Length: 250
Image (tube, rainbow, N blue to C red; front, side, top):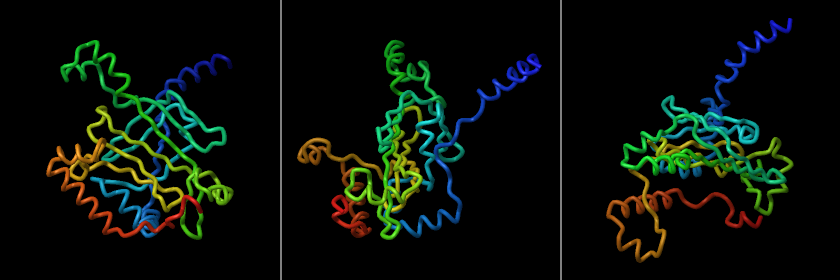
């Protein structure tokens, strides 16, 4: 009997080690997508302005605490696998700071050598290039007004007990040479659970001032200025934010 158990374990363990990691981003059905689009015309348009393509998802946030590895499906059948390095959880569960690294795909020293880095430079830089951060913050939701309250908002506790299980806004920015494109996960500000995964469109993205306005405008290209102005025109076309102006104090 013991021999049979050992034999079974010997067969199963390699299979378990090859099991696909759990998916962080859960796709929505067509009917869910229609509801989200109907309920979020302002914020869906705002959060997807810079998108070349996007999809609406829910986030399996507990995986950030429980899973050693997670899979993140992007677009066009592309997916990445990330492995956890550390997780910092707020004592009351209000925030989760997840830090990890790419398992798939991965760069090699040879990849970096192709960019004319020395072997020592490539080996030193490689670990940092694979690092990834994901941040989650608890929110509560008022169904009547369709207003989401972040954990540091005055009315967060009032609606927290009604938001069971706990709701989290989850964000990440995959802006790395490991991937050929830039991806971002953003929550919808007026929805309790839905997020949008965005692939950035380089034709729409632009630089913003990081120092003095005078120094920036003096060196800004005509293309960058045109992109910034188009974005400002877009924001004006959306109209005012539908949430109360004093939402932080409510």
